[in-house]
Amino acid sequence: MNAFPHAGNAPTNATQAKERLYAQLAASLSRMSRATSQTADLCQQLETDLHAMRTFAGLDAAKLMTADVDM
Image (cartoon, rainbow, N blue to C red; front, side, top):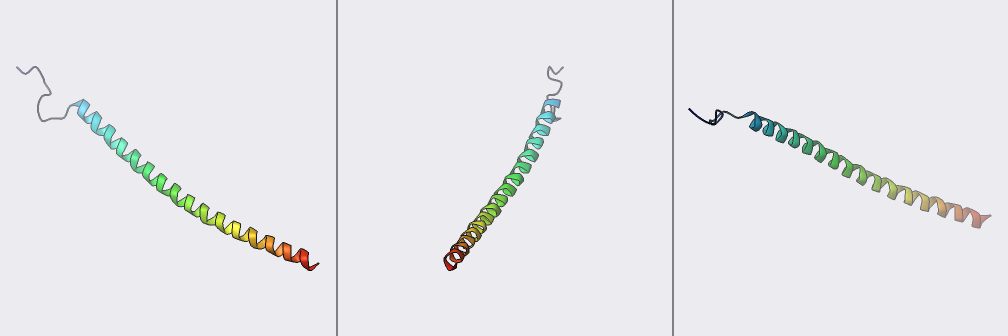
């Protein structure tokens, strides 16, 4: 008689639970990776937008200064 009833090739409940948790972890890491990538893309877009705003503000300030000089 075998002292370990689950000592065969059949997975135990603990093994199945571990595999399920690893699958959940992999799915969670995949979602986090996608979210991180989206955040990086949004940061790049924000940097581009801020640069455009600085350029616009500089041009607008230059127009204001030349308008004041012409008066």
